[in-house]
Amino acid sequence: MAKGMDLEDEFERLYAEVTRRPRGARWEPNTDVFFDEERDWVVVRVELAGADAENLRVGVDERHLFIIGRRVDGTRFTRGSFLQKEIEYGDFVKKIHLPVTVAIETVSATYGAGILTIALPVAGAESIPATRTEIRMIVKRTLV
Image (cartoon, rainbow, N blue to C red; front, side, top):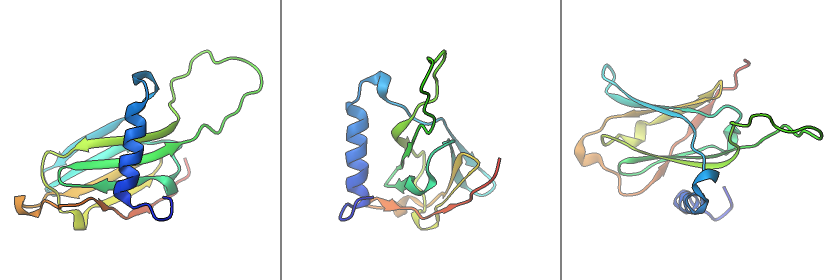
């Protein structure tokens, strides 16, 4: 994140940039969202193989989860042509509507083996935060 730029400014800038692109140029990572009834949590799993863990940003506001990052194409071919190209690269912004209010003070995020997992404990209705809050993330580097 650039010096002097807060989390909300970065979300707004990246979200505006991504939504200005033509529909074909926009990409969003595959995401699973499920409710863990045993723990009373919403769990979000995002497929981000090849993304730089240090540049991933996760934030939450009243009823939305934001994930911002970049996946860089590290392969450079000097000869030949693609026969099939399906893997998307570049900046991405993923905005997920949360079905319930979450307790932002106990949200956790981990990234390992190409999957970002975010656990969001359900909170009471009176706990809706007024501002966005960045979530600290533990990066687990795993060999595959």
